[in-house]
Amino acid sequence: MTRSPIALRALVRPLVCCLAVTVFALPPAGRAHAALPTKEMLQRLPPSVNAISVIDVEALLNSPLAKKQKWHSKRDVEYGTRPLMVPPEAKTVLVGALLDPSNDLGQQWQVSLIDMATDISIDDIAKTEGGYVDPIDDVAAAWTPSDAYALEIAPHVLAMAQPANRQAISRWLKFAATNKEPALSEYLTNAMSRLTDSSQFVLALDLADVPKRHKVEERLAELDMFSGRDMKRAEVADLLVGLQGITATVSVTDSIQAELRVDFRDDVGPLGDLAKPLVLAALDAFDAHLSDIDGFEAQLNGKSVTLSGPLSIDGLRRVGSLLQMSTTKFSDLQDVDPAESGSSNVVQASLQYYNSITALIEDLRHTLEDSRDNHAVWMERYGRKVDALPILNVDSDLLAWGANVAVTFREMGLAKRGAGIRGGVRKSAVYGDYSYSDGGYYASYRPAADVKNQINREEQAQAKAVRYNSWKEIEDTRADIRRQMTLKYSVEF
Image (cartoon, rainbow, N blue to C red; front, side, top):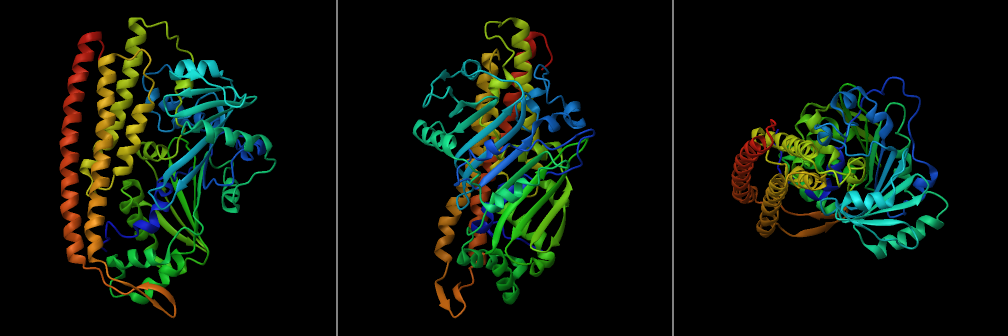
């Protein structure tokens, strides 16, 4: 069965980022209970929130895999390669965000609330982040170069607000100080109950009233799986416009398993064996292909579709990049004295920085072997991950190389995105007119498939050429910097 890479784009963009953040497994041994966010944390999230994630940090870092990978050991050279960037000093991390479901889930704003087991002062945060203390409405705050403010909003509760818009943050602080009850939507509230003894992470996206009927009809018409099946296509469209949201959970033992739940207003029976192909088409359309999900099993349960299967470390690293704290440098560098810049500290910091970027490169390098060229989301997110790495005491030449890698990641993502935009503009000329019928709004056309496919091939060929040339540059410069650092410090990089 062949899937059009542009199919379902307008409908599935709200789905895809969260489709990727889908990881579930058994609870860690000896765990007593889930670290649910307190009522006080939840009531600080404004009603406009349409996406939330919660991480039980204590349980996550006590899992066998986390211990084996040393996610908690900040002095280890492999620390920066951990897939989920959370402060080891935290008990619970709650992230609330306003995302734009119709624009590649673009982030309008985000606030992270961290229940700290060990306090970190605003002064220390400003120092380790390379920012400065800048109180807002008498709340202790620090501006950081990550385009975020760190705020001490209550005893043992730290907030990270992004972007660093002082006016917007001031208004949010006033709301958070006076609001008495959680203002989350019913869907997000219900999703919170999924953080239990059998999960360490919950991510939910409220998508009620997002899908547009004419866009759904248009995208379904482009899928080969519905060729000659107009009645089936209409039946599926009726279901898809009733999309309610997505909830995903995550837990880690000595391995990772995954489960995704997509909720609808009506029974999902009409999807039948099309459920999984539609999810895969959604991922590809959003340029967020995740090979692990190809092997997942799909089940239809009442008004929900679930996908489940094993997830790799690389897969967890990718999904962890989708909705994460804006920075954790304040934690990563908490025990590092900036005045201590001796050779051993430089070597340690430089090794950690190099190994972290190498892990990201190796992860994304697998996309060259993938038959699908749908990875723009990961390229963009990994550029941000490089930017978020601690740079204190890192060799200056190594920092310059890392900055170039981040730029190259973004350029590859932009090349793929640009191809989609140019192709969309060119293909718009082959669409027909919309009409009305007794049943409502529908598109009375059959796209000129041959013309549109040719446009798509031409634009994607240009993007692929950029990708291959960029990867050659990354590999060449990585070999050069490794040789340079090894000779300079007499330590194998």
